[in-house]
Length: 175
Image (cartoon, rainbow, N blue to C red; front, side):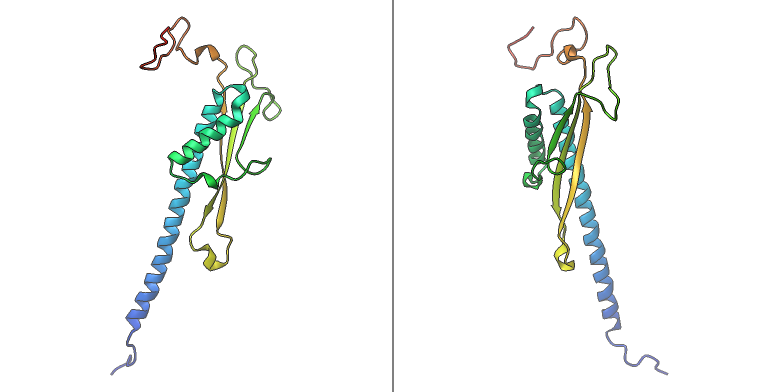
C-alpha cells in the first residue's frame, strides 16, 4: 500500500528551510562577534586615551585625549569617522574633576585632592541586513575609561627616592 504517493521534492523543501535557518543563525553569530570585537577595541582606545591624559599637562587634556583616541582607533583598524562630535551628552568627551566624586573628596595620604579623569567615546556601527527589516541600521554605543592621576609626581620618572631618572635608550640626556 502506498500512503505517500505524491511526496516528490519533500526532502528538497525541508533541506532548503534548514539551510535558510542555519544561514540566519550564522549571520547573527557573525554580527555578535563583530559587535563584541569592536566594543573591546573602542574600550581599549578609551583606556589608552585616559592613560595619556593622566600624565598630560593640565592645559592640554582635551587635545591629548583626542590624539590618543584617534591614534588607537587607527591602530586597531577602526574608522575614526565613527566618533560623533563632542557635546555634553553626546560625542567624544574628556573631563577632569578637581572636586568631589559622588559628593566626597578623594585625598591621598598627605591630604592632596586627587585628580580624576574620564574619557568617553561615542561610536556608531552599521548592522548587517538592517535595511531588510526597515530598521535604522546603526548601533550607537559609548566606550568609557576612568583613571586617577598618581599624586607622586616626583616618581613619574624614577623608581624610588634617590634613584636615577629613567632614560630612554639612545637618549644623550643622562642624569
